[in-house]
Every structure is written in C-alpha cells, then in structure tokens.
Image 1 (cartoon, rainbow, N blue to C red):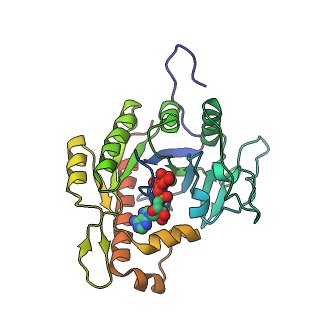
Image 2 (image 1 turned 30 degrees about the vertical axis):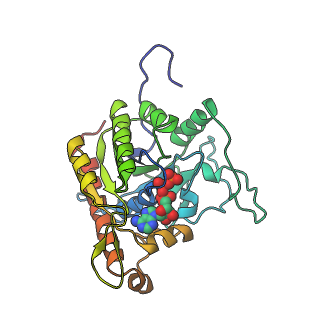
Image 3 (image 1 turned 45 degrees about the vertical axis):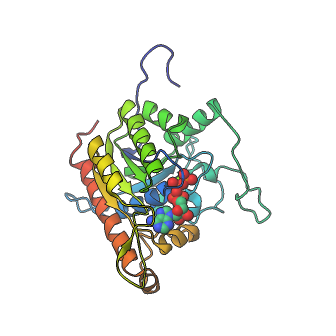
Length: 303
Ligand SMILES: Nc1ncnc2c1ncn2[C@@H]1O[C@H](COP(=O)(O)OP(=O)(O)OP(=O)(O)O)[C@@H](O)[C@H]1O
Ligand SMILES: [Mg+2]
C-alpha cells in the first residue's frame, strides 16, 4: 500500500522485463481483442540478438468484466494452482501464460461455468485484488525458469481506479491506446492518454480498431464508423504514433468467442471466409507488434 505522506514508490513486477498496458478511455472498442492478439503477435517474434522467441504473458486487470478467459478458451478452467510460497501460477493455453480475476471467481452457473459470476466489490477490495494480480503471480515457467520479456495488460475501460493504481504502483513501460473512429471515442482517447501521462507512463502508440470493413463483393474499404481523419489528426496533435488501423473482420470476433485468437487461426477456410480484410488485419497486427517490440526493447533504456 502507498505510504501516507511520502511519494509512492513504483515497483517492477517480479520476473517481468517489460510491461505494456492496452487501454482506452471507452468501453467496447476492442481493447481485450487487441491485447490478446498483440500478445500472440509479439510471442511469434524472435529477439534480434539471441534469435530466441519473445516470452509473453497476459494479465487481465478488468476486475469487473474479465474477458481474457473467454478469448483464451479458458473460461471453464479450474482455479489457478499456487506455488509453495503462495503465489498464483498462470493458466496457460496456446502456449501463452495468463492470469485473470475470471479464474478466481466461483463457478456459479448451472453448467459449471463462471458466466453468471459477478464481482461486487469496490474501493479497497478492488485495489487489493489489483495488487495481488500485479505482484503475486509467478510468471516463471517453473521455479528455475526464465520469466517474461513482455507482460501485456488488458485494462478495464475508462480512467478509473484500476489504471490509476497500476500507473502509481508499477513501472509501466508503455501503453497502447485503442480507439474506434467515432468522435466520442476520440474524446475518450484524449482522456486516456492524459491519464497515463499524469502517472508518467510512456504512450507507445494508438491503434484505430474497426477502421473499415472490406466486403467480399468489392475490395473497396467501407468506413462504417466514419473517416479515420479525426483519429489521425488527434494522434498527431498529441504527438502519439499510430501503430496501425485494423479493419472489422468477422473471424476476429468469432475467434474471440471460440477462444482461438485470430492472430493464431490461419486456416484456409478462415482465409477464404474473411478474404482481403482478414489478410490486411493480420498484416496490420503483425506490423503493430514489430513497432511495439522496437519501442520496448530498442528505444527504451532498462529501469
Ligand atoms: N477488428 C474487429 N473486427 C471484428 N470484431 C471485433 C474487432 N475488434 C473487436 N471486435 C469485437 O468487438 C467486441 C468488443 O471487443 P472487446 O471485448 O475486445 O472490447 P473491449 O474494449 O475490451 O470491451 P470492454 O470495454 O468491455 O472491456 C467483441 O465482440 C469483439 O469480438
Ligand atoms: Mg475488455
């Protein structure tokens, strides 16, 4: 807990080299989808010097509406195991370790799922849960194993207690702000960026999600939620890089529902169904991961 009176001392997360938050000022813009897919796209990369795979994990800090368990196909998983010293062990699927409040909720549904479980805490309890998820997870593969190169954090919507607690307690290396082209989402982007800047978290860049749709009939992009110009201008004015503009793709959504992130599901049937839009989405996401990797590892000195 922060000490009364004195400055709050930021800590690092044990066994994690770089911490990247994926956030937005507004709900439902695709943060969790981007966070999970960005994590996999980063995990598909190799370090330039050692040629070893980049080790990535995902932490879901959305205490009230965790989506990582579903997006990872882990919603019916048993509670995480504990180490002998009482730390939580990550739950792994598709080779990626994850932790979420969703794994800790009781299975209350008739089908043994957590679909109906709801968190009804506030204030200090939320802060306590956030601290536990931040500092009491053992991200090493085993007791001797290496930790993570990058921990991607899926943030809850808005600029409430959780992002503030994160920014105040932890040395966060970067934040990716997700937005859609609508004006109201853009106002929230400005709020999100200013909040992270207040707690001295560097903004890695922004991603415009659902920027357009490519139908199978013609290959022209349809800007369903308006032109991307306002987004680009806002990013430019705020001095924030645009990491990519992702199209709206059916498979991205169904992949999420089925627990198979789109960055991984590359079969021929999917490719045919999603056509040009799906291919563009994959390229943009891979490119965004490359930019994030260089910003985290090449442009920034270690703490
Ligand atoms: N590029 C995309 N193409 C198609 N569907 C998408 C895309 N991005 C997100 N979605 C869908 O939009 C919905 C909302 O996405 P998601 O849950 O990732 O948003 P969020 O910002 O994390 O929401 P919340 O604020 O509730 O945490 C999901 O059904 C997801 O599958
Ligand atoms: Mg979410």
